[in-house]
Image (tube, one colour):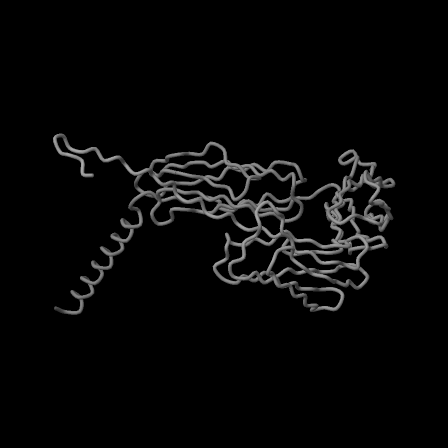
Length: 354
């Protein structure tokens, strides 16, 4: 074989391989999107964003779109093309609700089909959502130390993104546990609302709505939710001790943590459990602040029925003179019912033995 013949054979082989690859690439259904990412630019908060993604079946068999799944409830898919013949195009309409968004946004829609090479394709909607009047943060959270006698404050900014000048009037609170004041940072453009707690406050959560009237027709009223988490003075953990069913097969130990968040040091005395045989020890890991009570229940312990059992300790805090933690014991498992012995009936003609 001369060199010319070898080159001809090699060329033919490459040509056949190229054709084979082309045929292989076209086998089966194939999905191809014209624009898998849609940039909607800039929209005002509340305006819907609508777009229809167009795809082509570049394969040689029917393509079936089995599912279109948006990444969250704010994005929905309309009636999409369920099946598309080879060489034809289909559509997937989607809509994004921008009402609760501000700033840059990116949402994903996952399309599932019978394309074996890419059974799922991710589509994207992205852009910027802006609000005519921006309230940041929308929720004003305040952490209040236990027994605090001083107001605790936080700030909320009101930013005017419109061309027109904005006026804001004095804020009002629907809960006397909060007060609010507003000052101007930039005339007509930016304001700061200072929200303060009004002590004393009970431990737990306190909430209020701060309302400000504005000159804007887009947002004539600005509402700010103020939320205060007031720390408890004394925190006991766990709030209840639970023991296995009695009598205990082995000695059982339980620990109770008592934390003082108040301003004054706490003293604990006379720790006890109102049941026989229970040993109680108190350790003070942080003087006046953190205590651990260790309760040791002996082997064979069983709480008396119909009589409450609790750990108790005297406290130097006037509001909590005695701290109590209930002790509960699981009931004994019920025994399976026993069936009575069946009567034996003698066979006919046979005497019964005496």
